[in-house]
Image (cartoon, rainbow, N blue to C red; front, side, top):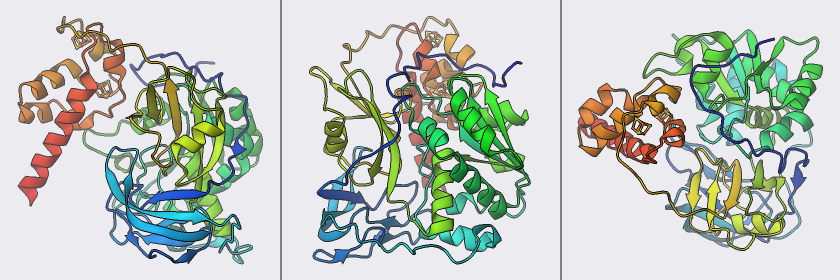
Length: 439
Ligand code: SF4
Ligand code: SF4
């Protein structure tokens, strides 16, 4: 049987064997957590606590007051040491709450919800998801309650649960699918209820057959269709997943709801179930700590606000010579210059390597390899030149805003041109020009 897939893309070394067979291990909560009030796409949450306050595990400590924001909760019980700024893995200082853990884990979670979750109305579901501070856990960190509210003229007929985890090395989503298939499918049903969708698909790459079998077993006698996809990067990018599973093309500049689809990551789906069925806010997440530079690679359940250093130390520490640290996967992750940053809602992994010196860059030889591998059907070499020579209008006309920054073009470029660097810069410039024009 031919497995489904999308056009173009690449086949990088998967390197998932380091942690694929390691069950999720709950890391003991640290003595101190640093919880940024900005862990999501949008504006920061506004602090609800002051220095010296006592807080409980799961207590809301920051309120997302604008449409594009998300509330933030304490990941331990204890005392607020500071409400100021702290270094975010995104590289900037952001408002944050520092809490000393009292070790008691006093929680505010209700023992159990009185109402059957599936009997909740779409509005009640969205409210519970918003209250729990859930954001997309695949890395985008877009507020889930907003995503669950598509425009009224864009009905959703299909929910796709994204179990691809196509980034090399990462295995936390794989372990979630193996260890919590029932919660994921129940969360997916809740998402169908919230959106009115009647078709439910779960897409899994064929390098995760055990997860496919676990979900398929659980999905018997349900409407969920568990579909095996070809292992190819970036299979998990929303538009590629929709193309592979439904042969629908999201239009240029459009979003999945333009073709009646919503995509949710497996971790997000599990978090939705926990919030709606038990009132549990997002205070911890699954991550992979791995790479050749980590002594004992693991999959962990980590409290948000735990420092990267403590998570890495829990995995035996760094091997001597490790000099490249990344949050997320090796293709799209963010390089880190310090381990003194906290695990946030967008942290899918912490990776370390002993990286070789950067390769020398050569001139473009017009080989078109970047064009042949771009999953968004863009012309990366042209985009790079438009940005380099500051022709942003032309860059926009060539579709720069449709670039998903997957890195395929840069991966295959024989001249080692940092294409994603140029394109990302160009996207920021185009967006800032647009904002100025509309101001
Ligand atoms: S241009 Fe963007 S979408 Fe296309 S391969 Fe490069 S990074 Fe990926
Ligand atoms: S892959 Fe590199 S060298 Fe080849 S066309 Fe693209 S930018 Fe130029």
